[in-house]
Image (cartoon, rainbow, N blue to C red; front, side):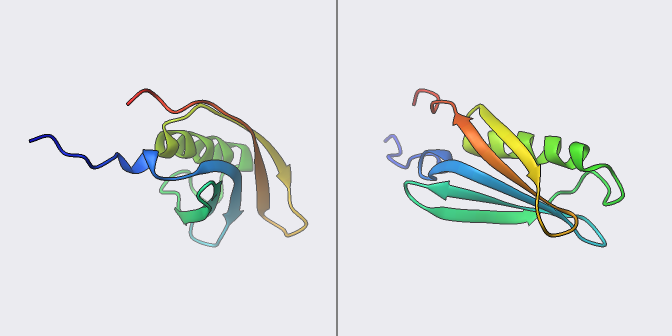
Length: 98
């Protein structure tokens, strides 16, 4: 009997924003979703916290694409807070076929 469960990435919403910030021991992130709304967050295992923001942004972007199974275009900008960056998802590709 075939399972009727949908893959997790079909149940999460469309990503709208990424938040990236540096702590003493690692880079941390949050991904905001809409329809249905929600947030996922965590820590990046790479790169090191001493690395450039661009390297962490690339890893966060790739992780968000893998999580959502979509091609994302993200526009990054520095926040008013030190060591914080905000990424706006300007385009989220379609979900792959079931």
